[in-house]
Image 1 (cartoon, rainbow, N blue to C red):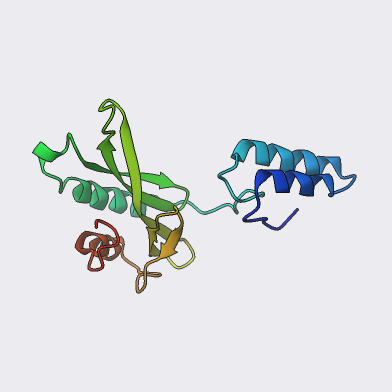
Image 2 (image 1 turned 180 degrees about the vertical axis):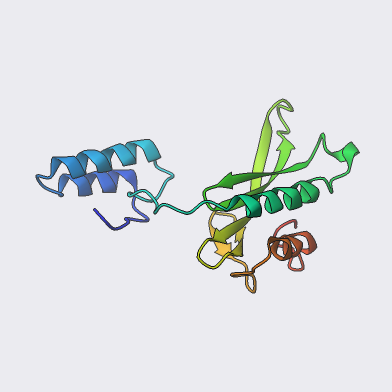
Length: 163
C-alpha cells in the first residue's frame, strides 16, 4: 500500500482491497481514503507532504496576483472576475463568472497553476486541459521569480490561458 494506484475506478479499488488479505488495518485505512475521495479522485494513497511557500515569497505572490486580478475593469467585474487559491505549495488562478441560468450562483474555471519548488526556490507554470488535467507549460519550469511566470500568463502568447 505504499505506492499509488492511479486510474482505477472505485469499484476496482474495492475489489483490490478484498485481495489484500488479512491485514485489516491497511484495508480499513485504504477503504476510508476511497470513501473520502469519491469516484473523481484517482489516487488511493494521500499525496506526499509538500512544503508550504515561505512567508516572504507568499507576500510577493499575493501582491503580484492582486495586481493581476485588478486588471479587469470595474464595470466588467459583475460579469467576470479572476481569483486565486493557495493549495499546499501551489497557487491556482481561477476565472469566476455568474451562472447563466441562476445569476446568484457562480461558475469557476481554473486556468493556470503555479507550483513552488522549495528545494530550488523556483516556480513552474502549468495549464489545464479540457479534462481537468494539469500540464507543464514549455519553457517555464523552475523559473526563479514569480513575476516572470505571471507575466507569461498575462501576455499569453499561445492563447492557452485566457483564450
